[in-house]
Image 1 (cartoon, rainbow, N blue to C red):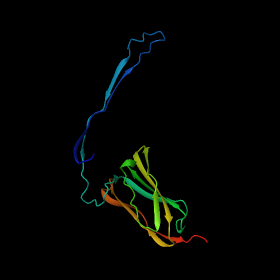
Image 2: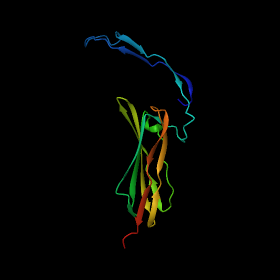
Image 3: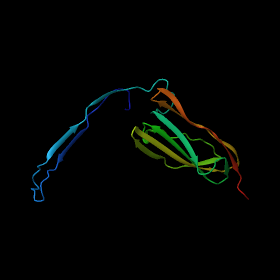
Image 4: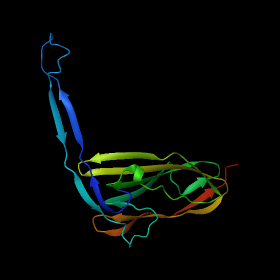
Length: 181
């Protein structure tokens, strides 16, 4: 739903014709099968508005959210000109990957960034769907020094507790070494 209020989901209809079990020499022009018609019930629902207590930029209602990162190598020490890939994954229960927000970026001219296209993946489980949004970012430092990659904080709405929560990754302090002479 894109708006709050009353909403009706119309019935889903399935119609088919089941083939008859005639032998090899049956008449090909005889439809002879049995018609099948199945219809679901109409569903009426009330879509709630975004709670006034939610303060995030992206509405993300879910029963669970996880934000994780991995690095192509240990990120505590970089070397000028050598790329390291940071992979961020946002997973949310009861959301498809296409509904998940992009990760916030950071702007540091000393750390050039080259993002890949995001990878979107939906996992269907016995309890529902889990959306996975993965972003890979190549980081290439161009000056030696100490830098901070800022914390990532994504607000989301816990549909179980009816409260705003936050998925977080802490800031990273890194040291960029000069190239070996």
